[in-house]
Length: 277
Image (cartoon, rainbow, N blue to C red; front, side, top):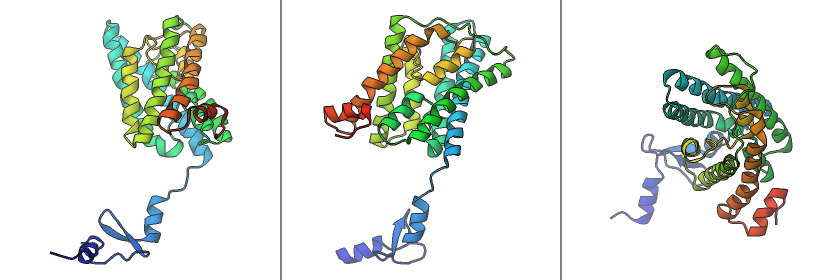
């Protein structure tokens, strides 16, 4: 039987080159011996510039709203059954969320949502300048996405004759949807799981288990008021939706800080004031 020293030497030897990794000089990466300088180059990537981050938030939110509205119109065109249209709307949203968060996440974090950006700002993980630019980029991206969807289906733009969604049940639904979305994001990050898939699955479920169809996003709420199609919302429903989303943030963020970051209750609440206790 080989000694512990011999086993350690075998484990630290590159099977292709036969080169042995010496502690302090090189490390094993995917079974290959790399110098520390090379390893550091692979691991450390420069952060994207602020302009790229802001554009990523604009582009991602535009594609998200374009998909929501466009798939709603397609479902409505293909079937008179609202259930079938909602199913198509749901699957398209799940797919685009996974793609967008995966591809744009390394650039900006792939928030596409003022609530999510606000949470990272409150947690001191997003700078004030970035937060101030992310929110308008997300809102303008959502509106632009609505225009793109209308252009593809040759529908007129600039309409504000959407569905009334201002019941107390829908307000409460937006609270639940936003709370759950934050739990999904921060829980997924804590667990080091596939956050893009988790968010896509959560929103897919939210379409069906909430009476509001789980907007959980002020920018998307505004963008969807620029259509009178299947996925629309009337501007007069904004107060109910925004109220639910804000309440979801105010309750959801401290709950996530307590649950996933293991902060004391008062310290978790202090996150809302950007303070550390």
